[in-house]
Image (cartoon, rainbow, N blue to C red):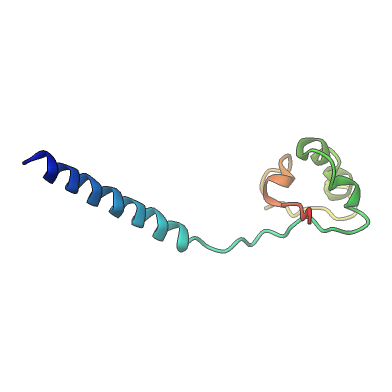
Length: 88
């Protein structure tokens, strides 16, 4: 195989790989996790760093909180990893 043919084969493989990645991402499911509400209860957390703000989530969403989370809820220590803040 000549050098030019090898280059063409590598370029075709690269394009096929890129198309595969694009199709994989295109078919990803939509985001279903609720965003952090932008209301009076959550307003103070909008300007904090994520890890700093997450320290306060358990006050209302802990076992004894006003809005407890279901037992099936994923790990409770990284709230803002899934529940994004609407900063706009």
